[in-house]
Image (cartoon, rainbow, N blue to C red; front, top):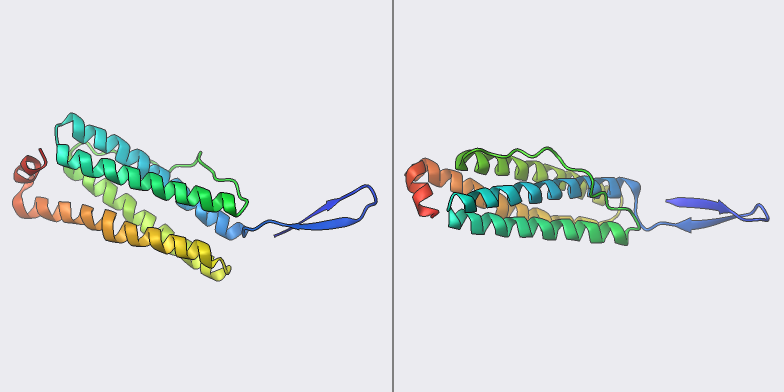
Length: 171
């Protein structure tokens, strides 16, 4: 993007910014999703701890830390691109009232993050920002292979062994 500034002699001087507007908008949208996931995992982990589901607490607390790492990577990339990270935006939190609804809500959030990551990867590709694309592909792998897979696995376990047996195993 070119920005022109005038001086006293009415001449112009061109300066450049590293980032493309479409890429920075996409990165900020992703940042909002990661911050939302971080907040949702935070409250869900504390609910699990309060209910004494220590195994769930430990895993979801770890996921919250990973979401924090994802947000940090996006913030660092936005700053590198000389854009302003928008930490004020969040999607609505969907806080569950029991373990199955919490897991389902977290999975729905991860599915939304995956869709946004794929869109942002395409935007990076389209605009020739291959470094952002590469970073986002790493986040996508982590989201699909770790976060989403684990949540799907927990919901399958509940279906297979029953809720009470599942909950007992999480204590």
